Image (spheres, rainbow, N blue to C red):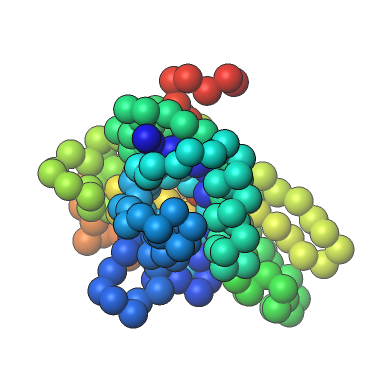
Length: 251
């Protein structure tokens, strides 16, 4: 029987989501070990996406196949009891035939950038600290340019094949001030993303926001479809996989 679950994790201590060589800590490895401990069955997780080292999630979607005679709620409690403190299932249900990657219609990520007179240790694993204030209005202009169907070859490599065309449904920045901290949150939702695509989108937008690039230079790089021309990439700790959408979502 197949179980579908929503997974949240702090990726700081892990070398990304995908299982790697023995002894390398990954989110997939930790969850598979927990499932094996509870069910006494070896499993291989399927996931909606493979987040990088240091990237977090609140809405990662996974599936696994096990024999389980009890209620799914019992399995949820049992797994969360043995998972590390920085990983937790948020829900679980039976859903035979479901595939978290191929059935997804979109993914939504959020990236947080902060500026403050001094660095803030509590934000160290949650945001990218930049040394100067950013121009929120011009970053909104760059974000809007991403909306629609475009060739994003200047922002990453495809996980397989050669198709770099992606449909972006939403792309915007939100600004807020908390005492002396300026917070810039970028939200982007698309059908799917290239490897490091969101981090490169954020990286170049911050360059525009701090005045190192103007909008026309940004557009030249975007439209070039040449990854070699885009050397800007944001660090991983500010990125969170927020939501994976499916056609059967009640939204």
